[in-house]
Image (cartoon, rainbow, N blue to C red; front, side):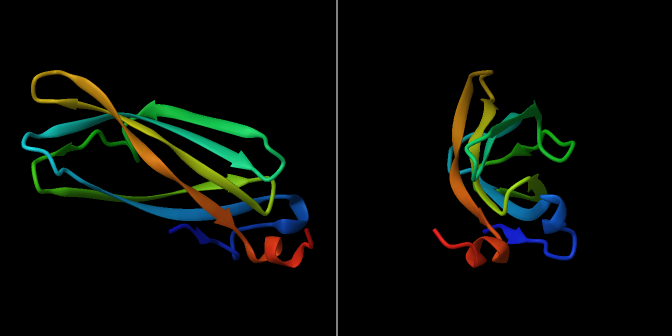
Length: 117
């Protein structure tokens, strides 16, 4: 679940910041390596920002069967709410690449709750 960082956000300057935590668990029978990430971050005005790159937080972890990898990161928006989701590109021990979906989650701030629909 994302956490709105009120102390780091500047609503008067349309700058809203969230932190989020991701936990990946390998439920398969062989080790897999996280190669790339692809996030789609949509603000409440419908503008989409795509973030693509190698690994996460500077790492391309290998996750053995039954093990987990966790990390924390953050994002910012020019609006007080939005959504984000995407995919991770993985590779197994045989060299076969595949994608796993990152479920979409909501980015909400207390500022959003103050605005009438």
